[in-house]
Image (cartoon, rainbow, N blue to C red; front, side):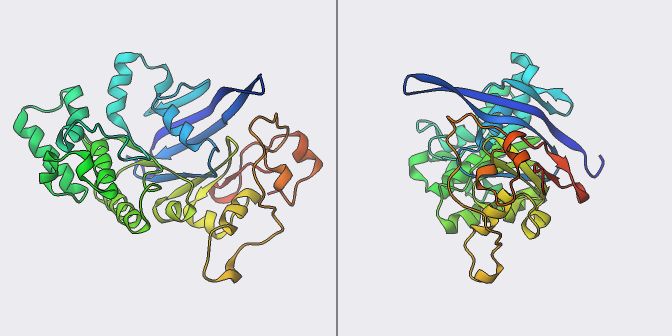
Length: 321
């Protein structure tokens, strides 16, 4: 295994949805020609405003939502072209932790049955004793007492239910976990506990994770690299430290400048208009950020910038960065 072995490659992913407004049909580009890779053992954070397409990327990778075009290569095999049987096996390797820990659990199933569900479906347990032992071991890994296996979701707090959601994703051991806003529904103190848990699991088990969040502080804490999304487009990608210390895309600068700080002198300035993203019903030309950007030129208004590589592996979709 090489240091930067790639486990997932996303090539030119596109996904549109059809919506109606005032009697007219519109095509909403939820994900627009997005490409990136995820390296084994790393956490890749995807961050952006609500509606930027980050959750659609995660759901499309595991085929909860169909892609219009593009490739998602897991260890070289395209997830989008796998048949039903192969996709069933693929879902053993790629697991998802959902945003709402209560909605993702069956209220009529015990915690132990929920954690063991994927293993039951795929017949990975040799007998009932092994099943019980692995469930107990997995609950312990996520900081829960094995006795929780007998409880039901309504008997747990929000933080405990999210730990169960993580346990479900760990049994049996996956190659990639897609965590979609896994702490946004939790109190701040519980968020910290769950983030520390994920960090510990990454170090102990070498987990590979695609971590989706709108919270820059959360992404900064857990991610090795960060991809920034805006209006369905990938606009910047860099290692976490480099991105937060020296953001190059004006939208990334806006995001970081918007984070509350005790020391206001450290806020990034530059005349960026915060404003609101344009309506998704508007047919945009050029760079989707040009109407909020202080360095936009005439070229930005007519030609969408492609993601290009700068020094140190950083990638930016900006004509003037």
